[in-house]
Image (spheres, rainbow, N blue to C red):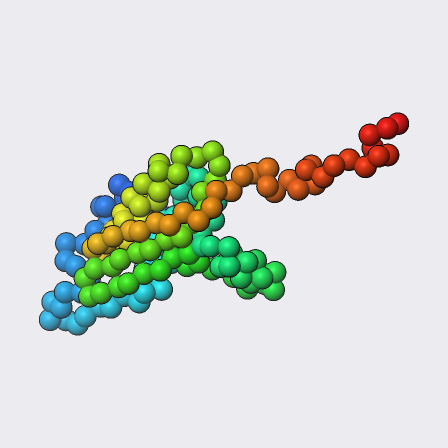
Length: 161
């Protein structure tokens, strides 16, 4: 019995993704039929690639993240495509990302790693040429923002014993 090479849902490294690029482009008709890739497939692959990059706190703007929080509260699955917008043609794709970077990661380094990972993953797994990966950084997450309890001033009772 042949063993399946895909055993987990791990996003391939840029080198592994490059090795997966097919010789023929997805949109090419070889006389045996055509393959079309839905926008949401490309968006999901891009979203998975972004999540692998250190320094990315979240995908999407504040409104999209608020909706994601509501979604997870009511038990719906996490939206991997949040913050990802794609345009897919017959042989090419353009990708727009909105993300929040974790402090103190250098924003320019994080965005370049994100761009490379998305480009390699989409080209390697889907076979479409990626014409551009536009990234909009909407915020920087400071870990101390999560510790609201520590920021509160102590009451008079706590200050004096």
